[in-house]
Amino acid sequence: MGKIISITNQKGGVGKTTTSVNLGACLAMVAKKILLVDIDPQANTTGGLGFDKNNLTETVYEVLIDEHPVEQAILKYEKILGLEIIPSGIQLAGAPVELVGLENREARLRDCLLPLKDKYDFIFIDCPPSLGLLTINGLDAADSVLIPVQCEYYALEGLSQLLQTINLVKGSFNPELGIEGFLLTMHNTRTKLSFEIIEEVKNYFKDKVYNTLIPRNVRLSEAPSYGEPIILYDSSCRGAQTYEEFAREFLEKNKGKD
Image (cartoon, rainbow, N blue to C red; front, side):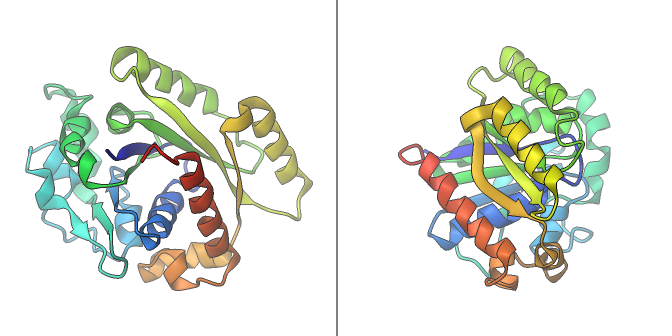
């Protein structure tokens, strides 16, 4: 049986989408079957794989709100075998308001994804930078939460609120929800502050913090505009190498669980 992982942090710009796309791509490159689920109205995971988020007829919106069959929304990423996505689109922006009036509003994504769980090794949910109903759906559907943490001054700001939300979801909807791990992103080897943040996060979250540090890297920032994961856009750059390293660490921690 596969594993569903929500990639979540209500702070924007910490590397959620970069991690969703590049971890998923690296795992698919080593023969894992991966499904990305884009529930962010900005649809950056969708655009980052080269899909036109403004001209898709079947997206996660139709699945969540209109109850279309989830299989109709799945797209294959043709450049990497085994990498697929349920895309987002601009219509998802109104979904949090529409969800309020719907039955089973917190569990609609879970009900959609559970039938797919056996078909994939890992399903990654890219959540929006908020703690609203879309993120609640992402947490309720997941087995665990992967939390990217930026190596900058405000890195820990808001994490306590996120952890409270995770505990709320555990207590009310999803008692088996766990912490997959904390991934340190945008590491700058030239600043003392970056290393101080790393120490602080590791002191607080202990062995839940991955050893891999994702660096600030121009090529990582460029890759989405070409619709490619970093391992296709520039496999020799530091960003690609560290995401490959992270994929190996991720698989090691999940050995026997996938």
